[in-house]
Length: 331
Image 1: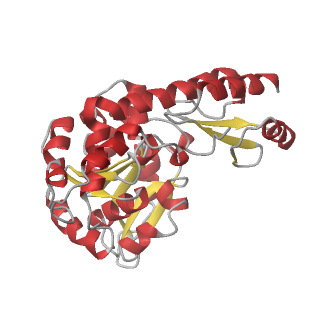
Image 2: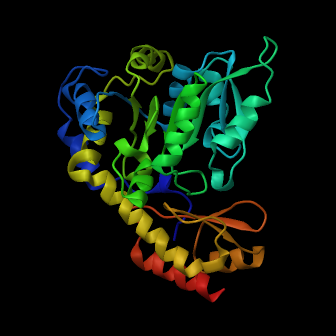
């Protein structure tokens, strides 16, 4: 019974069906009708004109976004526990050709204008010091906490006032939207580029890069090609994105994942280390307690000392979720 990661979740049948329907001869790369239709499709979703590019991984999405926003001699302020800081094997630095990541603090892996300013204001404005040129946040965060529209707006306003680009890593953007009950447009104030996650939410191999600053998209098309991420049969990636958007499937799958996490959160009680606002849970657990859960057939990651992480997904079997909830209660 696996609660490791939503990356390991099954692909939604609608995604496979859409890929099968796209299995006809069409123009290569991103010249097919499905790929060309993404701009209009995502513009309608966000209620404004955007440029949308498919990419095969979240790492590629984040790294290409930051390369568009930050020069090699600049810096990107992010949380010290951000995925771009700890889990992308230096891809942001590689794709930006050397930009520096500048870690900041914040509970639940959330930044505040104050924590961001504390990093930026400590840097002397001279040629010897790397200057911040971009701000990156994750929503939902690496600890499953969600930025509200007002919190995003405050951080975005700070970035704009200082002339920085603003990036949102939305690997679990759908889970954040479902938790807040807001529209996608309401959650991206001042954002220049959004890495819109689909793989964790029922997709197979396609994420979306959403450019609210349209001028950044053209050069990113070339960066995508240069980086080896312009797939020759791009229609299969575009088909996945269209399938997830059809009938708001992306929201339905996120609701299912969040609901399963809420069931576990209720059982966990005061073991919880962070609010459960998406589909990740971080629990206090002794090694003996973790071993007891594993002995009953549950798989999950050990996290920091005395912590475990549990992740639900859209297809987490409800009987397995119920069984894990009972096992946690019984500890």
